[in-house]
Length: 50
Image (cartoon, rainbow, N blue to C red; front, side):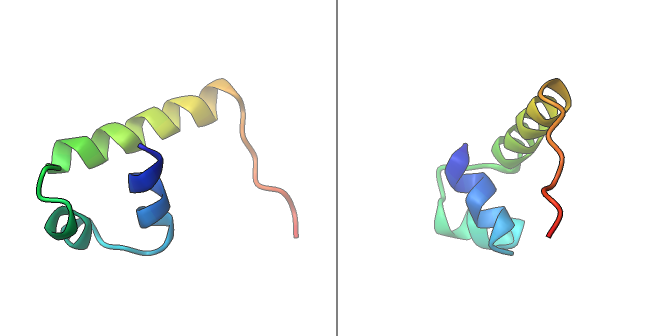
């Protein structure tokens, strides 16, 4: 999961990720995003002001 989130945060497109990791499907990426969203809501994560 961390790898997918890191790749998305590094501005890799969904298509690039799927092409680089043929074992993944779009549902895997969406599951990672859904879990990250769940954690953000559960732990009330807020960005640190610059």
